[in-house]
Image (cartoon, rainbow, N blue to C red; front, side, top):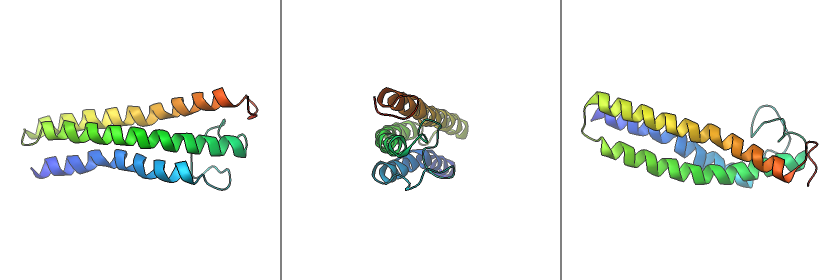
Amino acid sequence: MGFWIFMMIMNLLIPFTMLGFGKYSSKNAPKEINDIFGYRTSMSKKNKDTWEFAHHYCGKLWIKCGWITLVFSIIAMLVVIGKAINVVGITSGIVCIVQCIVLIGSIFIVERALKKKFDNNGKLR
């Protein structure tokens, strides 16, 4: 049971991170375009408009994805409660892989939204 609790906590890290940073980012884009903190891609760093749009859009997307992955993770882990350690470990690994796919996939969605709203120079279409 101790291993299951540990893995449950580990599987909740990504969804809670997405929810926390999503909430923060959707309301407060970093003031200055930088290379240290925030949604940093070449398109998002074109100008202040692209920077703020990317953070707002990504924040809202991460909130949605965070809730979805949170529910998915809890359900998946509840299915294996009391099962053998290897079953819990494999299920937890699969949950983590799905969470990472969602996390990385969000980049493509935000980039597509940026390209739809802005031209290659960062000007509104």
